[in-house]
Length: 479
Image 1 (cartoon, rainbow, N blue to C red):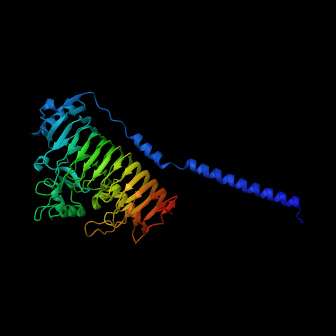
Image 2: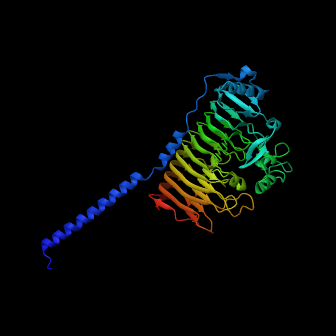
Image 3: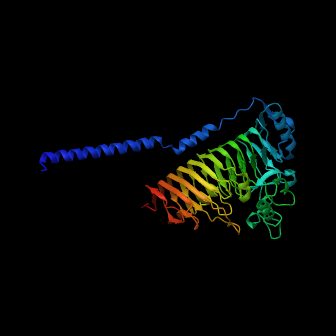
């Protein structure tokens, strides 16, 4: 058939119509997919909403009325215990610690009690280790055991709080608790006992490997494993708000096997060994907000059990939201691991500031084939990073401090998303990822609108699926 100009014009018009129709159809499909695809941080908002605002009966119990003396030397353990017991026995309320210096042994919280530190209250925890006996069911480096009591403890309680503008001072120092770590920078001297002696950590490691019943893992006096500071254990509806915590023996805030936890406006300023700021473990539905972390170890480190203990308990830590926080000194800002054998999922961090010459990394995932575990669904967005030493993001599946950290439990990492992040000085690396040679177990890592400056090595990625970049620059170069 002969093609006339009119035929050609009609053909072109028809072609453009088909193209437009196809384009509009694709555009509408994309729009529909966009509308149906869930917003990750909408899930974070739902988690926050699920953590209810705690309420307590309108009753107050001032520890002064129970014999407490604010002289910094009188031991007030019994007065505080009696006030809490009286409050709990009447159905709950608020136990007041007023302005002044109050020396005490460990504090045990009970259901429906809000321990409230008024402005100027300074709670000084005893330096006499015998005050933390008898041993209780607790945890050390994510392994359950019977050990010294945490400084503030709650076991199987509901609706509990520590609030106010006062200070909780663990009084740990280079002459109390810290030397047991075995480092001369924390007061240890050659020949003195330390946690790595064969009767201490190696014994606990062996009990973990053999899965000795927890009731038979008895430590405490004569051993050298330091207690945690604030440890609600198997509790529900927990609030820690407003207080300042300093000079911790070991991990600072350690919700263990808990559900519905809010940590709001807390300042952790503690530079001792293993002084992680906040370590949710086997815990779900956690909101960490408006906090400042200035620590001797990780600022926030999400845990899930170590080795066989984690696999025995098998409770992932999940549904954790971190926002409006300031991370200063520390080994990492937001960290997942290294004790992570039961796995971690659904972690959201947004609107945070991280900045210090003594902050090693902003975001970190660490495990190995002895600990195993998984990390899935980590979302980090709207973060301002001033200065870090090593990297904005570090994922290390060869993590090891001690020898013999290789096993048969391949870790898996997937769905790690960083968005809207500016880094002024990223130190040694922009992004540092070290996967496993045996398998590509690091999957779906993405950076969107991330801009990193002053990284000596922009990118080091080994044994991982390729990182997905969108509108991302490192040292001014588009990736």
